[in-house]
Length: 433
Image 1: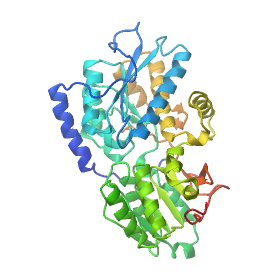
Image 2 (image 1 turned 135 degrees about the horizontal axis):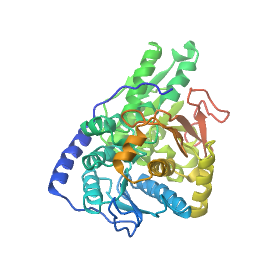
Image 3 (image 1 turned 135 degrees about the vertical axis):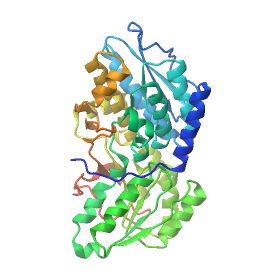
Image 4 (image 1 turned 90 degrees about the vertical axis):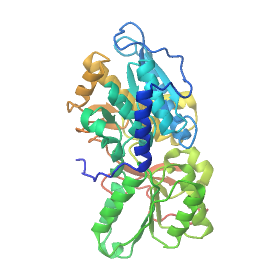
């Protein structure tokens, strides 16, 4: 059963993005960035041409690595669909515009894709920060907005989604991401809980902040003897990251729960911790350690050992569809399964869910798709079952905590907080691996 979690207000950046949205929609802006395919949109009523699906992704900028992984997931899904006669007997054509990690650009891109190119369907961008304003554009045009990386409460709390209910996130709600860690602490003997000091630093971001804030509230209520170290949110930059890391290191906390957005931020914290000879027993970051080789190449494999991250998917996830996707990914891009970014599975799941809705309704009519996705039906994806609640959150999603173990990305905690045989309860010293 999905646990309830509190709602957090949208941050100032997201609010500013919605202001930009209003100007963009009313001003009829043109597209930003270039297309990664040669799509020429077909009108929704055209049943003979390809089904054109539009999306905006961060192909460079701060979220470029994630955006590129999402692109691979979308393209891998489209390739699979087209190899099996497409959807409704029509080939699928992706039109992807680069938003350069900018909320202003993402608004412009969806205005172009829907208003100008008249794509049939839309997929979401990467990050809650960009999903919030992007989904508002889709809502104004009556489009179903299926996405996989916009699970922050701010995404679902927008006035347009509250009114139109057009946003559907196939992945785990962001605020619930740290629940396995909370349950792990809850399962510890009271004598061990009383000895714990837990630090909760986070950057002011709609993805990074909610899971840390919620986890801090829950851990505080577990046992009043647990020492809680809280900090003011910091602004994302190398200097701010490192200053926040030094503040955490000074507490000598046993467990650090970091609200991070990317690999560079986590790497900044790890560098400061190592320089200060501060080695927390457990270090878990909201985002960054799940980036596979992109993470271990930056922090090195030895330092990565024991570092943890929440996610709803991993390469050996016990799901036949997932195993097939991993096989196809490796055949196309090479590498090892551990190198596959979880963003790939999130994006692939978006395509799967939309395909099931199109097939079930026999149409690309967005109003029909929205009604179908809100009908209580349980759908399948490489991340597991998907069933949307009234606001479009996936109430069936399960969350796990993963951990680096000598170069291998393994599952450390189960959804109920119990440990796996590969779990490292006490992180090795930096460089000791």
